[in-house]
Length: 318
Image 1 (cartoon, rainbow, N blue to C red):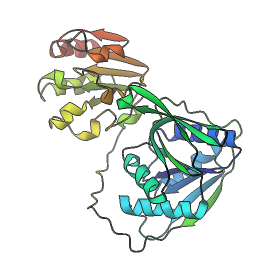
Image 2 (cartoon, helix red, strand yellow; image 1 turned 90 degrees about the vertical axis):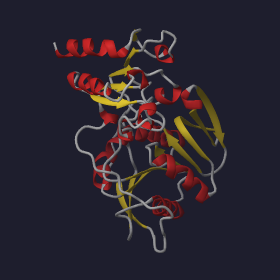
Image 3 (spheres, rainbow, N blue to C red; image 1 turned 180 degrees about the vertical axis):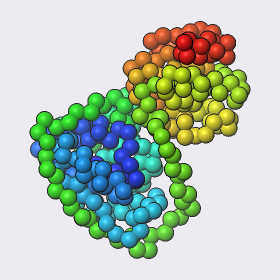
């Protein structure tokens, strides 16, 4: 009944420790081993962290073609791993890439998949997965009776909690054969970014269409800098070409959990809130008193954000 968490890439993504926490609890309920499959440069970092979260074995993938893993190669590698180790529950920390890979792996294996999960429990030989639906507005509980299943986790509501008794995990090398695997779509490596990541920021100031123009987004960046945080954006202004998609917050962007989240000129659609609703404090500035954002905000200013931003910047710099 062993479970496996699957991770790959050059560095551990935000939410990894939270995913390990849930995986450890599930393995405890089942009385089973917890294996952590890793591929790429992330393997060394994972080995250093694994013991603190009760991992039984760190399974490092090996084989030609693992250096630059495209989607087709990655799915094949994961399927090869599953064929050799037979995990019963295959878990993913739901990063942007995992949203693509998890359902494809489930399709390859012919097993059920649940996306947007945030709680997983073992009950009478069935798996109960609680997940968000309709952009986060609804919670759904799935009962999975199949012997093998795939679950992709949104970790913003999970609190990282290391194991009471750390382990000394085995490190196993699992060879996978990617010979003959061809990517069906061109793969362009993501641009490497330096500096702090939006997912790890404690303060985020995000702007939306209420700013009126792309030029006004500069004030969002200025306020974020003054507060020692990072600037984010709604999908609307990303689609309009005002800012790069790397700063998009929401269900199709970055999933964040800052101490302070400021939503400037953002209506508060469920798709956006899926990426920031775990913030400890949400502050909203919107001229519409009936905007959905005020259902989530602890503090709000009903006003034209373009008029308010200079005052907020001045106060932040004082």
